[in-house]
Length: 288
Ligand SMILES: Nc1ncnc2c1ncn2[C@@H]1O[C@H](COP(=O)(O)OP(=O)(O)OP(=O)(O)O)[C@@H](O)[C@H]1O
Ligand SMILES: [Mg+2]
Image 1 (cartoon, protein in one colour):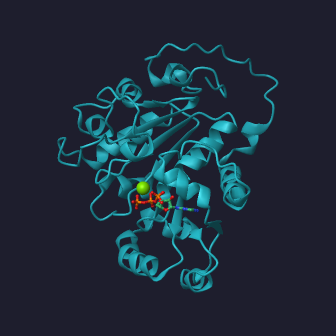
Image 2 (image 1 turned 45 degrees about the vertical axis):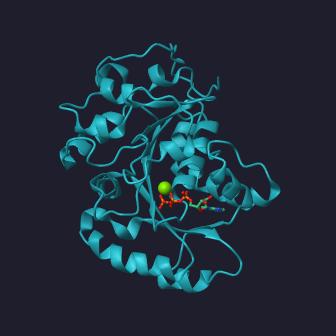
């Protein structure tokens, strides 16, 4: 059983949540995992900033959540493919939308989505919005995910943000103590030790990468980081992914037959397609 199937990336505004979510998803797909990446920000729909030229066919996370019923079929239809990576697909609000574009949905609907989507991929990565007071989906993600990575910029704004926000997560169900605290976009001149101490220590830190910053401006987050100066960032992303991959899963499965995978969308009920989202992703671990 995979313990870290659903991973939420949360943190202060502009801390690198979207960048890290995408890099984690890419790294998982390199390791032959199928991934659904959910960008749940409805204030600044993420798809228009990370894949501005992608064609979408009414594939909105907002429409999915506010429909009368949520099913595996409706999830599959809302998934936006990522060109060049058959193991990765994205759910997002679309350009021009906001939380009033669609009817209001309840937390139960999010719970339904979580239950269904877990059967559709090896991992679900949720790129949360910072504003959990207003964003029901991100707040629910912090509660329902198997692991939360909490990104923190090493500056006073981050301290102010978390001091204001963490009291909103006081209930035990949020398991704030289990969140993986990661300093993000760290430059040498920043007060990293002061911020780390303030939060009672950190798990690790992601260094500033000029290449990553350029990728942001050029909408190329879905490309790999290849420059030497990005090595420290890439290494930490790999270490995080190692935490999420089930060791049992990594062992060669001698007894199990390799499943034949077809590329047609498969709308059978959950029970009949336990293994993976083969229908949506095509062959496991294979790029176009
Ligand atoms: N390690 C890093 N090295 C260089 N730039 C980084 C790093 N992490 C984040 N950034 C930059 O910080 C900016 C914000 O990144 P990103 O959009 O991923 O943050 P976010 O937390 O998702 O923001 P928002 O709160 O608006 O959703 C971008 O310009 C991105 O390139
Ligand atoms: Mg973001």
